[in-house]
Image (cartoon, rainbow, N blue to C red):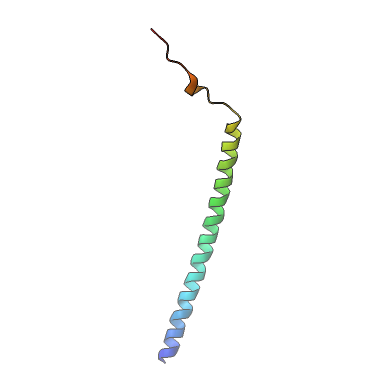
Length: 60
């Protein structure tokens, strides 16, 4: 009886871990997509020079 209870508990834990892995895989996929989109935005900005930092203060 004890062995069956342990087996059931282990089976439940294995199922829970499988669900956790699935959720983490989905989250990882979404993060990779977000990262790729941000890298594309950064690459697009790299072609445009930032002139705001070059402005000289006006003497008054």
